[in-house]
Image 1: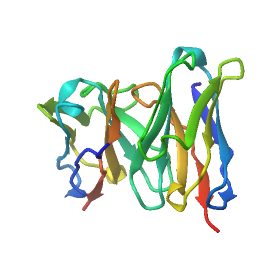
Image 2 (image 1 turned 135 degrees about the vertical axis):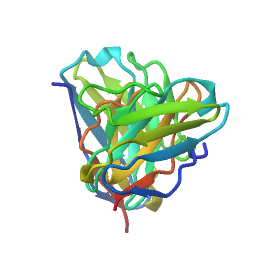
Image 3 (image 1 turned 90 degrees about the vertical axis):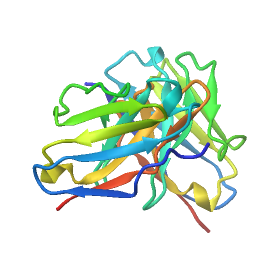
Image 4 (image 1 turned 180 degrees about the vertical axis):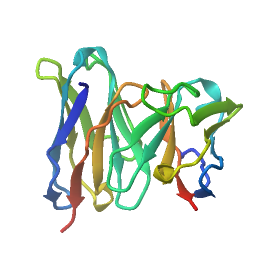
Amino acid sequence: EVQLVESGGDLVQPGGSLRLSCAASGFTFSNYWMHWVRQAPGEGLVWVSRINGDGSSTNYADSVKGRFTISRDNAKNTLYLQMNSLRVEDTAVYYCARDRDLYPWGQGTLVTVSS
Amino acid sequence: QSALTQPPSASGSPGQSVTISCTGTSSDVGGHNYVSWYQQHPGKAPKLMIYEVSKRPSGVPDRFSGSKSGNTASLTVSGLQAEDEADYYCFSYGNNKNVFGTGTKVTVL
């Protein structure tokens, strides 16, 4: 079964850092682009970042460029999102998803940025 | 990176059809066929319903269909059922731009 499981969400103060993880199973992880998508409370889905199969190509939404870094460890079948200089407006559930069709999705992990 | 435009809400009675639009530009929706649709129930992760404009993943009922004309993609739910009540989002995947729609809440009356 193809499965994605996010972890690492927490309560962090503005200006702080956090690293999210997404553990993949049931497919050849290194063959796929992977994405991070977020959803603020009561709001819609927002695409955050993507990375290609070998990690050599990345893209970011303007709202996180320069603060967030996407990476992957294909030996561990794990996707990461390093989030620095966190802002209150980064508060959201963060999902990882596979490939251009965003299938499947993980269950999400909650990041709360608050003092 | 402006969001694609969807109507905030749509509704229909059981058995009726509802169509949701997703309007972008020639740089996203109109520029390729990588438009997908997701269903999200409260407190749950989104679920892929349509990919590449009109293709249905295994397990998705054929009541769900997708199409595209110019810069606007559409999702139609035929034969509405109570479990179809949810939020729906379109997504455009491109080499230089990845963007979701604003979302549409579908209510089954």
